[in-house]
Image 1 (cartoon, helix red, strand yellow):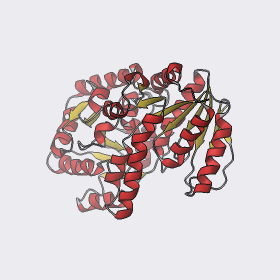
Image 2 (cartoon, one colour):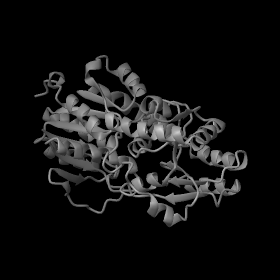
Image 3 (cartoon, rainbow, N blue to C red):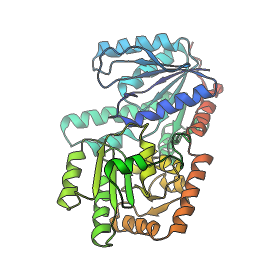
Length: 393
C-alpha cells in the first residue's frame, strides 16, 4: 500500500515534539511493507529539500506561511503526490494541512483518513487570552474540527472521549478506529541507563521526573507545588527534574525560585527525543499530573506510554484516558490535587516491593497494547475498509 501522510507541524523541531507520532507511525508502516510519502510543515521556511527518513519513507516540506497563493501551491504539490497513493492520511484539523489533504483526496478519489488525536479547540482556548481576534480564530478552528470527521472516509481517535465527540458527528461506528499513542519498545526500555544524565546534573538523591511541554494545559505548576510539599511537609530529601520547554518556562522557573526550590528542581529545557529515554531512565519516579477538564479528558498522553515502556514507577492524575492506560501499573491520584500527588509519590518511595511490582507491570502494559506497532495495525484496518470509500470519480 502507498500512503500519503500530511502533518501540520515540523517533524524535525524540538519546539514541536508531538510530531514524533506521525514519524513513528510512518516507520511502522514501512516495517509492515508499505511505502510512505510524508508531507510536513517546517517552522521556518528555508526551501528545505525533499529527503528521506529511510528507504521507503520520503519526506516533503511544505511552506506554512499564510495566504491563498501558498494554500493553492500546497494543494498542487499534494495533488501530484496523491495521484500515485492509495490513502491520504492527515493529522489534526489545522487548515494549512487539513484543507489541502481533503481537497486532493476528493479530487483524486482517494481514501481519506483523519487522525484525530487532540481536541484542538479546547487546547486553543486554554492556551490563549480572550480577544476579538482569538474568538475569530477559535470559531474557525471549531468549524474545521466539526466538519473534518464528516468529510473523511475513516477517522481514528486517540481517546474514548474523542470517540464520543466523533460519534456526535459520524453516526456509523464502523468507520471510527482506535489510535492511542504508543511507544517504541526498543528505544524506551528498562535496560536504558540514566547514569550519564545523573552525572551531567550531579544527581545523588532519588529523582522525581516530569516530562512534557511547558505551556497551558500541561499543569507543571502542580508538580512544582508538590515538590515544595514533599520537601517541607514530608521532609523528603529528593531531586526534581522538569524535562521540556515552552512559553511558560520562565514563569515556572520564577515560581520555583519564589518557593525556594531553586536548588531542588532542575529545568533541562528542550531535549531531543533520541535522548529522552536516558532522562526517563535516570528517574526513580515519573509523574504525569493534570487537572480534570475538557482538554485532559481527551488526551492519551505520550509521556505515559514512554514511562510504561521504560518500566518506570508512575504516579499520575486519574483523568480521561489515563486510568485505562495505566490500570494497575501505577499510582493514580486525584486530578488537580497536590496533596494526593504527594501522597502517591510517598507511597512508591516507601514501599520497594510495590515499586518493583508496578514497574514490571508497566513494561508489560506497553508490550501488550501501548506501542506503535499496535496503533499502526489499527490504522491499517481503517485504510483497508474499502467499502466506505465514496464513488468520487
